[in-house]
Length: 224
Length: 276
Image (spheres, rainbow over the protein chains, first blue to last red):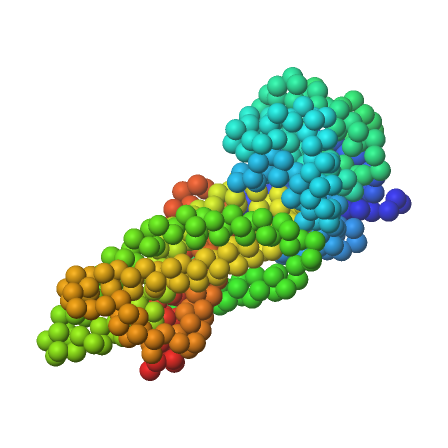
């Protein structure tokens, strides 16, 4: 069996309302594997990504990332601490009190240990490529949701992650954002990194990925 | 299937008031323990910062000092001038009835430097910056910014709390120094109006014996204590919100109340220990 990167062992989770989200879920994601996750409930699929990143903890079972179980205070987990996770949530998660450039520069400096000049140069290049350089000095609230999500994707790209967790926005994305996002995701899918991509929007890159369905807390492996 | 019947026991009736009373004691103690634990994480986070992370922390720290100290300077100075004057009116009334106007500057300095300065600056900082920190942390938690920091390997304790704690310490200490100076100046101006024979030189000479290294050390201690604890306490309440924007004002209120309580309690204990 391929080297596992992410392992969910008998994971059970209930929502705050008491609804069973996962009940004894077992699943393994190998290094470099690319998965497209389809779900009747986008919320449950998002919860799976949160479990995989340590942002949510199961009430029973455990999640093992890169050989080390995730626990409370997951920011101490070595995989996360070295910036190996490409986290692209549907709301973007950009820092609203920083401009777009700083949103890209700060993680490079803090986590990837780059100097300010090098980080700024990389951020400027990435923003130019994504067509967002005109917004570099703007704070996230001045951008539309699609641009915010694209900026989060650019930020994750700069971190050169080993595992991508990508949750696209539910609504319609402008065509320009779709094209840029598709190109970035296509490049990420061609890399050695593992990826879990939620949804099946028409603009998503047409690259071979394992299709997995999530229905009532159970994963159903589909065709490659 | 019917729900199981709950049996009533006599000891429930006997012990439930005791349990309720116990809960009233346990909850505040839990909160104190939780705040102390968080403070220890922040201090640990400070000492575990890598040299290459200091640049990022410094950027956040600079923003915090600008908002907490620089933007509050005018408000602090105006408050201090007024408080200095008001205090002097009270002190002057008492001293003049005993013909002890010579002690005016000494008494004013003791009151302002020992208690009024640290406490009123603390109240200003809680009102302006503590509320802002609690609301900012709560909205960051709700909008997924804190999650994004964690996922990107940016320890939120080091990135969010350490610069706010350091910024609070620097700001509160600096504001106390400005407050004390402005309050004494305001006091002198009013004293001079009430007692035109009073010279600035004699006013300053009166302060000489009162303001020493000990007073400065105590001011520094209070500044560091209040300035460090207020942002961390308010941030802790802000970061406790879970799902709804309606939790934000509740978090702000709880952060302010806890900060005020902590500050008055710490000030009372310090005063007892140092001047009692």
